[in-house]
Amino acid sequence: MKQLLIRHSSPLCGEICISGSKNAALPILAASLLSTEPVRIANIPNLSDIKILCEILTCLGCTVNTKGGHVLSVDASQVKNLIAPYDLAGKIRASFLIMGPLLARFGKVRMALPGGCPIGSRPVNLHLKGFAALGAEISQGYGYIELRAPRLTGARLYFDFPSVGATENILMAATLADGVSILENAAAEPEIVDLANFLCSMGASISGAGTDTIRVQGVPYLCGTDYTIIPDRIEAGSFMIATAITRGDVTLRGVICDHLKPVTAKIQEAGAKVFTNDESIRVCADSPFHSLDIKTLPFPGFPTDMQAQMMALLSTANGTSIITETIFENRFMHAAELTRMGADIQIEGRTAVIKGTKRLTGSRVCATDLRAGASLALAGLAADGYTTISGIHHLVRGYENFDQKLRTLGADAEFITLS
Figure 1 (cartoon, rainbow, N blue to C red):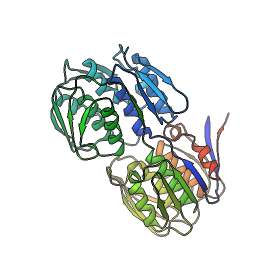
Figure 2: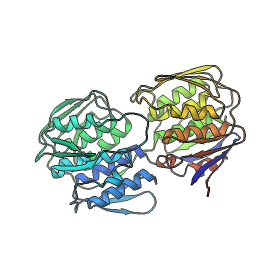
Figure 3: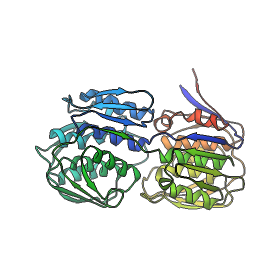
């Protein structure tokens, strides 16, 4: 069984390059199903979620080749199997993103309900509502969902919540639908914009991505393309907080600073110095941190995927901080593990009250989900002694070479195997 071992760190210093975005790469890989021509995708992160989705594409009949480094080519011209394998689909939430492309191109698809991190209820009803608006017939049973539509038709639909996954799925489906689709109260995350840019590079007609209203004019077909994924803003934010929690001085290369504005603002408010350049961001932290009030919100608000990491930082700040989680109702599971390390955290519904402490202590803890794993690792950097984190299969789903990047900055961190 693999675990992550971290020792109390001196201030992190140096520079690292940020990997491509997992949350952008997954829907873009799914979107490759829309074309009969090969697509080439660069800056793909080497992560377990990516590998699982590539396995799903292969099972459907795609040819997926690694071009060396972080480049993949996908040829979906020979897709014949329209049933996603149960054992793979149940492993990752992003498996559900193949529904829109397969429905749009082939008129039918069947797959198991998706898996992912246990961070709260993430029903697919918004996806299904959107598919129904485009003309799909939906049937469910025995853990599977089946969609059928001889031809999708453009429609105006309003999302009850700006769901990233639902926006991505319906956006992909609408590209090949007859007529115009208007998606209102759509998600505006940078990953949505990246997906739209990818689809447009294939010949789609999309406007408004990055706002709450997206207009899609359906086209007869989509062609192949050569595309580069955006940097991972959550990985970048995590290393910004790693720098802050160790009172370090680190430069992150290959970032888009506009994507990090919510995290940057809160880190600066807490007391760190942040310097931005065209494609880099530098964090300097050499003084005690102040308490904060944070509420997670859809973009451009503070991202829920950074909430756990920020809780680790605030556990070491002066004063009492409050974090309100509005996106997922079960995303405070890391709090109990942080308290094992000496943090003072009280959970009241969707609110966490964090009283800063001067001293965290190393402990044996367990990552309950992807971002919880990052939170515990960051706390381990600031804690006295050694911290051993189990459940790190979650962590490697979202962070490429996490331990190596920490070591590059001077941390003592390594994956170990226990018999």
